[in-house]
Amino acid sequence: MNQENYKLPGGVEFSSITYEDILWQTGVFRYERTGSGRDKITFYWNAVKTKLGEIEEKNWCRLAEALIERENETQLLKDLIQWCTEHNYVKASAAEIRKDALQLHVARFFDDPQWIDFIPFNKKYRPEVLETANIVFVRNECCQKVGPVTQEQIDRSHAGTIACPFCGRWSRYIVLGTRLRPEPLDPCWDCDCNDPDMGCTMPSIDKSYACPLGSTDDKQMEVLDE
Image 1: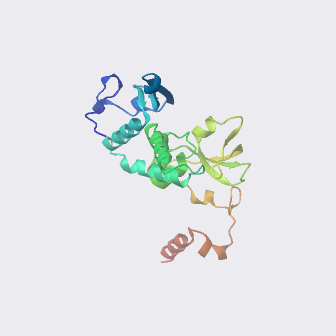
Image 2 (image 1 turned 90 degrees about the horizontal axis):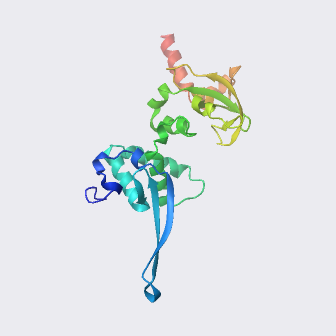
């Protein structure tokens, strides 16, 4: 999109807009007619309602991409597109996935600890973000596995339920503990062999090949032995 030639609602300059200005509030669908009789023409218009006003949907997508490029966050958009593609359970088209990723990016979902994908997304693409996050370990009724969520997700729980960190289903849960910052996320919490009371229940003979930390522990023991 030619940023200089594109006219934003209200005559706002592209150089002055922010993500908040073009935040997708709601979609707008309408049709318009021109002419009369045999010359009547009907056409449809898809737009996005924003703080600046209504922007045609295709132009909103181009504008969002231009703003992301201006803010040097192109790689982050690629990460969101990859994430949405890997979690495309409704089999949306590539165009729809890209549009969804743009909405997530403009809304800064990856910075919102209430987002149910806040931990898994940032763990994969921006692990440094989790260093200061308020991590709580829970066990949901559905999967009965121990996993991390944010305190903010606990605070916004609905009817005593939160999204399960494993299957995403909203179910009842119990809090098992809180991570003390700046401790990193303990990978053992995601392991089926981890018991909150007993700790690791994996047989020692299996750790060498089944535990991802097994080789690391062996190396540490070798150093200690020296």
